[in-house]
Length: 124
Image (tube, rainbow, N blue to C red; front, top):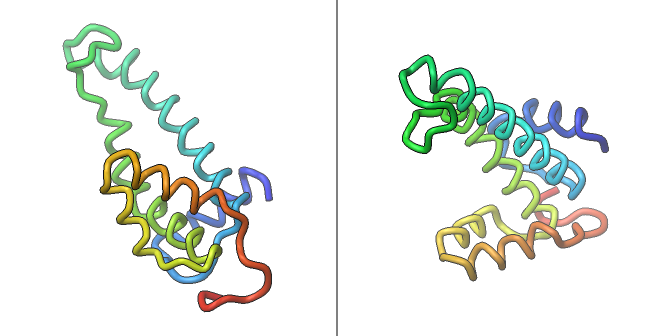
């Protein structure tokens, strides 16, 4: 799977928490969102901040484009992560591990990197 296909798949399943997501789908999606947030951060810092009366890239300036994108992509991010966990035969509720500082995030990252189960599992 390539990045374009992964983005189309994830956005096509905008808030679908059922089913499975392959490793490639998940990590291409993550790379695409990182690139998107970097571009929006540059636009916010270089163009939007001066229009709002702040210095370019000032830490205290608002970043409206980045915030809108974050809100718009919240559900797809959660849904693809839950489907990725389903691919490793884990419930999407394991995402709550990210609420535990450092250790929870590392364990969740380990689960997301694991190879999916071969054949069908209880999630599809």
